[in-house]
Length: 122
Image (tube, rainbow, N blue to C red; front, side, top):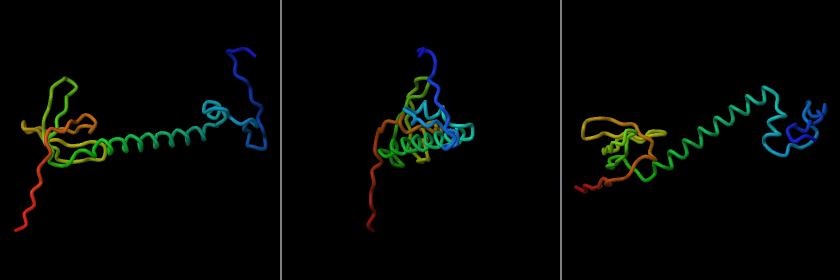
């Protein structure tokens, strides 16, 4: 067998034309799929990636609360400090002293100061 050539797998009519040999890895499995199955697999993978990204963003938001003072560095290297005003699905909204509003990924934030909570029992 030449190292540059793929091993051909015989098609089995009982399994819908699928090879009778069990795929050994993901690449072998993908090579057995038809176009419709590949589209379905692609859709599943994209949805799974979106879910994992959203889960990671929500996990990154857990240390923060609305009212916290936070800091982040822009892509230009400027340090921006502001108050967290909203926890979005995948990002947070920050209001700065310069009256700017930023939407930032939570993994870029550093907590500067926790908003103190006071309870009025009057």
